[in-house]
Amino acid sequence: MTNQTLLIKNIDFLLTMDGHHREIQNGGLFIRNGFIEQVGFSSDLPQTADEIFDFSGHVVLPGFINTHHHFYQTLTRAVPAAQNSNLFNWLKTLYPIWARMNPDDIRISTQTALAELALSGCTTASDHLYLFPNGSLLDDEINAASEVGLRLHASRGSMSLGESNGGLPPDSVVDSEEHILNDSQRLIQRYHDGTPGSMVQIVLAPCSPFSVTGELMRESAKMAREYHVQLHTHLAETQDEEVFCLQKFGYRPVGYMQSVDWVGNDVWFAHSVHINTEEIKVFANEGCGVAHCPSSNMRLGSGIAPIMDYLTAGVKVGLGVDGSASNDSSHLMAEARQAMLLARLRAGLLGASLSGDDSPSLFSARNAIEVATRGGASVLGRNDIGSLEVGKCADFIAIDLNRLDFAGALHDPIAALLFCHPQKVDWNFVHGKAVVKNGILANLDLDLLIRTHNLAAKRLLQS
Ligand SMILES: [Zn+2]
Image (cartoon, rainbow, N blue to C red):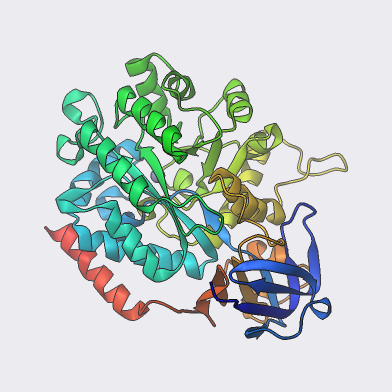
């Protein structure tokens, strides 16, 4: 590897999110070959490097980590027939539209979602692709993502329990379990890289309790543990799902996961809204992580996840924009704001006194940023990202503070990022390489992508 150095100097406010949550005024980063070699005051760092950026007037913080998404759903945002339904009816409306997708649609939607994520501060994105219609493969997503430059945790999703066997999805979009497992093994062997600085990891991700069998859950867990890859699925998203699990399996969702060997440090669940105190203890004791998706939970009327309770109990919590058909956005900075506001609303609804000297502290902007950075890294099982510390990957974002949206809020520029209207980033670096430069995506022709994407979305809705 070449010996490439990068100096970021004169940062107004540097939020490291290290173990001491250090915030440094007039800070800097010195980077070698994509890894951070020094963090500190700008004046204490080497003054020369192969590349130098002066970020005076900017705030710099670790890149955000998205722990749950379905990139392909950017093609079906705001579909009229699915605007006002809860999860099960929303899914039933959209499954037949998604069944028309082809490999090109997967490629286009991957780049659209990643473009939005990159511009809104994301440096590592997890995606959950669980439909493979008309010859589509997870490879289409992985190849398209490699052109954008973000780290990708590609979850090989699956659905095997069709309507005729008591599942929710139509039989036309489910697959045989033998094929799912063979393809999962192929993908791990071909793409998974578990080393520090890894750009692609494979995750095994049967879709949800109502779309796969217990047998596929067990077999997926066995394979994931053999290859040391993570496991991911939707869990306890709605009350409908809870009723389904009790009727079909005789367990609440978490009990069902325990029965199929799906608890552990290598498992993270999307949503986990309808969870009781005992189940929170199970997550904490077993090391299961949660991908909190506040916009989607509000959009589909699913409920409010108890993230303060999770964090108090020691459960790993990350942030996810969820699929773009239930958000209908991939703006990760905006999602952090939603997490902050929704946690406050829940505290208020539960009767926490919001005034007086003994009132509990509300979920802060820094709490939300911690979930979106360090929290996400722990949920994805990574210790090389999520904070700006010596030895970690140089994944960071920079935002110019001199803009209308922050006027009057510069007493605390970190909090301003979420208290004020969430912005797009000006710079986004992944492994020391800029994927957003001065607010422009470095590796994509955005105008062309938007045109192509809109044509693909129109075709899906019209066919
Ligand atoms: Zn989802």
